[in-house]
Length: 117
Image (cartoon, rainbow, N blue to C red; front, top):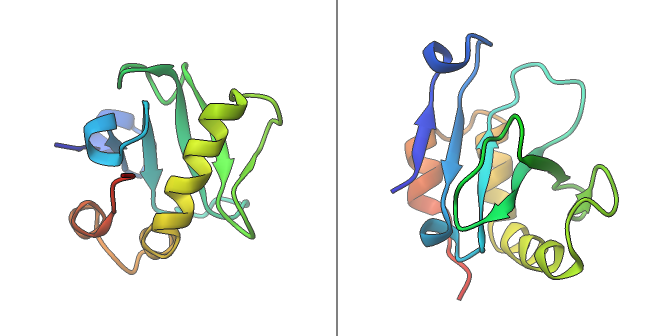
């Protein structure tokens, strides 16, 4: 089951949802959040650690969703990991964007995300 971290946990005024490998089919955890006034377009955080461990603050890198998946810091992920993340984002692009835009809740996000085969 995915986890939602709330503002009480972060003290930053927003929440994010941690999705583990069993939720996504990816080898690592990813975090998806709503836009809370960020100056950048939609992004997801991707753990550098395989297996679902790691912290979005210390062990993760940002991947932009639009216009196509792209590393914010090129070369942050291995080619294989970036290819997997790209496939997952493309499979779930609209759901991720809808959550970023606040059109769907964290619960709806989890219900609508599709797992990689």
